Amino acid sequence: MSEKYDVGLGNHNVTLRKNANSDFVSFWDNQAKNLHWFSPWNQTLDWNPPFAKWFVGGKINACYNALDVHQETKSDKPAILWEGENGDSKTIAYSDLFIEVQKFANVLKSLGVIKGDRVTIYLPMVPELIVSMLACARIGAIHTVIFSGFSATSIKDRIDDSKSEIVITADGGYRRGKIIKLKEVVDDAIKDLDFVRHVVVLERTKNPISISSKDKFWNNLMDDASDSCDAERLDSDHPLYILYTSGTTGKPKGVLHGTGGYLTHLYSTFKWAFDIKDSDVFFCTADIGWVTGHSYVVYAPLLHGATQIMYEGAPDFPDNSRMWEILEKYGATIFYTTPTALRMFMKFGDDIPNSFNLSSIRLLGSVGEPINPEVWKWYFKIIGKEKCPIIDTWWQTETGGMMISPLPGLETIPLKPGSGTFPIPGVDISVVDEYGSEIPNNTKGYLVIRKPWPGMLLGLWKNDEKYKSVYWSKYLDCYYPGDYALKDDDGYLWLLGRADDVLKIAGHRLGTAELESCIVSDEHVSESAVCGISDDIKGESIIAFVVLKDGIVIDESLLEKNIFNKIRIDIGPIATPKKIYFVKKLPKTRSGKIMRRLLKSIANGENIGDTSTLDDESAVTEIQKIVNSALN
Ligand code: WTA
Image (cartoon, rainbow, N blue to C red; front, side, top):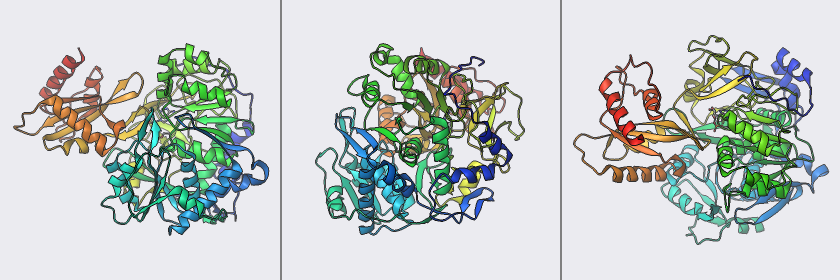
C-alpha cells in the first residue's frame, strides 16, 4: 500500500482546498458562479436533513449552460466525434448540436410535453441520445434514460413508476455486429401502459419494425420543427433527471437529480480531475444509460465546451484493437474507462496497444469499481507510458459526480495504485465503525459523507421514506453510501467494495433482491439467495442458490436454463448468473435472515468465519459439499 507514483501535471492550487475546508458553503457558492444563471440565488444551501436545496432562488437551465453559452466562441468546435460500431462516423459541432436540440425541444413541445413531464429515453449510443436529453432539459422536462441492455419488463417498471407519456427509442442499435432491436422491446414494454401517448422512433439500423398509431419517426418530426426554442428559466432545484438504480431491496429506485447543484458539482470536478483544456479530446467509454454517461459524457464535457469522442458499440468489435484505434484516430488526450474494460484489454496482451500511437494521451481515469493495483500499473505503463496520472474516481449514481479522486487539474500528489486518494474539496468523508465512530487507520470500516454536497440526489422519485431509510438511517445525519473503505497512515482512502447486497457486475450495478424475486417467481422455486463471486475480468459475477418447492423433481440443468432465460427477459442479459446451485436449505440466522455473507464466502472458496448466529449447521455443510464438487 505504500508504493507511490510521483506523476502529476504540475498544478499546485493550495488555496482552493483551504477555502473549502474553512467554509464549504461559501466555497460551493463561489464554484456555482462558473455557470450561467438567469438570476442569482439568495440562499446557497437550505439544509433540512436529509433534504438539501442548493442555490435557492437561482434560475438556471442545464441545456443553456451546455450549448447557448458556447455559441459565440465555439460554434464551429466539434462537440461530438461520433464513431458508430459499423464504421459510420459523424462530427457534430457546437452549432449543429444547438440547432438539433432546439428542433427536438420543439418536437417535444408539439407532442404536448411540458415542464415537469417525464420522458423515457431508450436509445443506443448515438448523438440523438444526447440531443434528446438536452432537449428535455431545455424545456424543463425530466429525462429518464434506460440502459439499452435492460429488458422489456425492466423498461415497463421504469415507465410505469415515472409515468412517462413519451418514449424515445430507435429501430435498433449495433452491438458486436448484431442489431439490438430496441423498438421491439419498447413495443413489448408499453403494451399494457395506456398512458404512453407517443413513441418517437429514430431510424438507426433500418431493420423492419411494426408500427402503431403511437409511433412517430424522428426524421419526420424534425423536418417540420423550427430550430429556435428558448431555454426555460428553471429553479435551481428543478429536477433534471431520474435515473433508476439498484439498491438492497425491491425494484430499482428512481434517483432524482436537480439542476444548479448538480451542474456546479460536475463543472468543478471535470475541471479539477481532468484538467480540461480547450485543446483536449476527451473520451469516456461509459454508456449514457448509466450515471457516468449522464455526468461525464453528456453534461460535464458540454458545460466546458469540450470536444469528446462518443462510441456506439462494443470495445472489442470487430477486433480487440478497436479502442486503441479510436484513441489514435481522434488523437484522444484524456481516457476514462472501467476496471472491467482494462482487465479485458490487459488480457488481450500488450502488443495490441503497443502497436498504436497513443502519444496524445495525457491523463487516464478509472470509474465504477475498485481497480486492482496490477491493473492500475498496467494502465500506467502500457497506456500512459509512465507519464500520465491515473485518476481513480469513486462516486455513485446518488452522488451525481466524483466524490473521491486524485485531482491533477488542481494539485500534484503522489498516486498509489488502487487508492482513490482524497475526497474532493468541499466534501466531508470519514470511515467509521458500526456505531458511527471514526476508526483507526488501516482498519476496514464504512464510508460516510458528513455534509451535503451540490451533486447530491434530491431524493428518490416519489419515495421520500425510502430515501430516508436507505441512505440516512444507519448513521445520524450522515449519508451512508454502502461501501467499505479504509484510510491508510498517509490519509489515503481505499475503496473496498460494497458492504451491502448491491452487486457490481462488469461495473453494472444490480441488486440481489431484484434477481431473487425474479428467480422465486418460477413455479418450481421456493427460495433463492444471490451473491457475487470474484471474476478475473468482470470483477464480480453472479451466483444463485436455489431451494425447490417440496416434492419437485426436475432436471436441474433444464431449470437452470429456464431461470437464466427468465432473468434475461425480466431484467436483461447483464444480470444472467454464472451458475445456479440447487440446495436443500439456505443458511439462516435464528431469526430467519438469509446469511448471504456465508454463501459468498463458500462460493468464493474462502473461510466462512463466525457462524455463531447460524440456525442450522447442516445447511452450510451441504452447500460446501455441492460448491466444492462443482469447483473441483
Ligand atoms: C462502486 C458508478 C471502487 C462503489 C459511478 C459505488 C467504486 C458504486 C468506484 C456506485 C471506484 C464506483 N472504486 N468502487 N473508483 N467507483 N464504485 O451508482 O461500490 O453505478 O458505491 O455509480 O460503484 O455505482 P454506480
